[in-house]
Image (cartoon, rainbow, N blue to C red; front, side, top):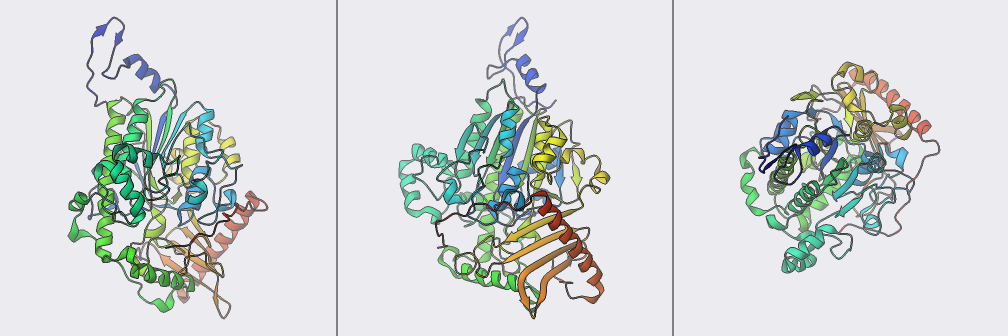
Length: 524
């Protein structure tokens, strides 16, 4: 057992008290229950933005510990490239058709149950710290989802928004710490630059998470979601000193689209939006500077994550706590000329880091290289809470218990050897509103190939799309969609995608259709 705590106290027959007043016997009793669960979730973090995934621009020694002591999933793909549908999928364990959240400001229906609710029913003390975003941000700022399942709700969706909202816990914390800074933040909002370390969202999240660990009900196992805002744009909210933590010469130069005449019309539309964003006042810095800010925010959040990991260790919880690190989706950072996220499925946008540590259950340093998706986390966690597999499959038929397959990699192929990402007119177009006509596209990844199909942009009634051999072309530069030597592969993958869509419709007959948010919301 790994315990870094120093135990100090006086001996009393039969008991030994540790420094925070809990007995060794009570700590042992905790280890015999269901495991504690901690999810550390970042926002908009691409898969290659951690040193354990090969980044040289930033060192992330604390997060890397989870990879060294657990399993690193090499191919985790988001079910949608935008926040709200992706998070709704992760917390319900379903793809878009199962929960009905298709667009950025859709509202998760009240009858959908987030997996923390199931953990409550198994006796867990459940806590949210930070961002949930399973419904559009404006709705979620007005009311909680009735089945979110959190006993303790420390919510904040964005450090620059909703500062007078009574449920914004970060805003209350800032106001109590520094009234002058709070007023400045109210005035500047999302244009605020270089938050001080002691007032940063990531510091608030780590401090609040540590307090929850210290003050937990020791009669119950805990589930904590520590959901950070970084490294989400606008890329300049990091403490300024952390720019020195970025290896400037190793910041990658953005890749380029090799031939814009060969990309689908939907990607061309997104390129137009990206050009407009790049010219806006919010993003006046060079792309290199924006990227540097992105990595600086990761360096800072790594520091804060390290504090939480240390607290798990010093509380004697190392052996009986499963820790998951994941993000909701990635960020193009102007690779291929594209900003942030949108109706495209290149790896920087839809492939995310996913690490899991569970001592004595997962062999340290394991790598899993078959496709997984964030909604698999739900089934994995509910299985740990001793829900029967049949019950989990009834609730979330697509979600898979990954702990079953980490040691049985070959068996996993018989259950799933693909990943799907759906874009259903999810985000905004160049005009700051949803696309009209609607833009729909789907990614299907299987084996060496990734197929991206655009369902409604057509040229002379020809279906448009992309096909990449991800083994030979990991930067996705050679579109094989019209290559005569790959037509069989394209047709076969189209069949697989069609079969998946039909099977998914059968799982969720009639479709759910998440409620639409009525307020018109446009970009600045």
